[in-house]
Length: 65
Image (tube, rainbow, N blue to C red; front, side, top):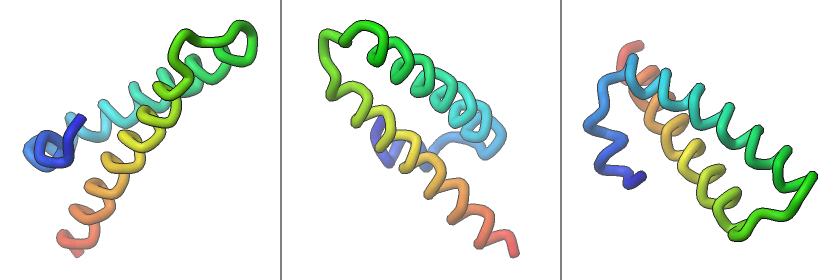
C-alpha cells in the first residue's frame, strides 16, 4: 500500500486496517516459523506497511491536539 493511498483513507478505516494487518502479520510470522513461506520478503513488506499506517495515524493525532 502506498503512502498516498494511506493518506486518503479516513481515520476510522485506517485504524481498522492497521488492526487487520497486524493480525495478518502475526499469522504470517507464525506460519513462517512452522513451514517456510514461498516469499519471506512479504513479512518485511507487511511490517513496513504497518509502520506507514501507524505513522500516518500518529500525524493525524498530533494535528488534532
